[in-house]
Length: 122
Image 1 (cartoon, one colour):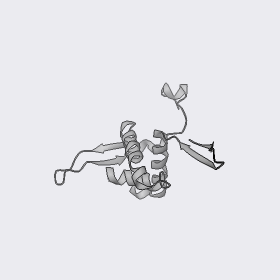
Image 2 (tube, one colour; image 1 turned 180 degrees about the vertical axis):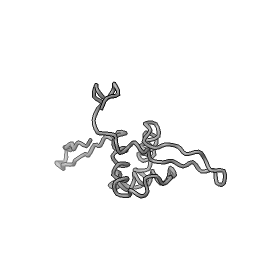
Image 3 (tube, rainbow, N blue to C red; image 1 turned 45 degrees about the vertical axis):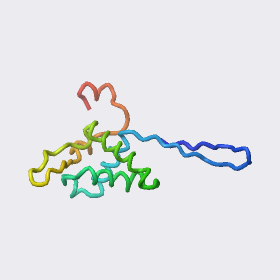
């Protein structure tokens, strides 16, 4: 969600402040768009750096990298917390943690859950 606020200073200059609010659903939409564009890569394992770079390139591309990196790391943490990205067991060879995009993400709909969805009905 973005809002643009107009600020007035004493010297008469007018400036604008862009205030943007990110939620976990922004990460969900980013993953859904990634799967639509790259259908062959949807089951490909990703590292944390790959996912963070995906957020920086698509969702936070208007920010400098030093400012976008903390936001991208937060979006990654929210993705893991909400089950948008699933952990794969570590490989014995190099010990890196890899993640896979949840296959059920394509079926998730925007908006709050309705009463029928909470009861298990579609």
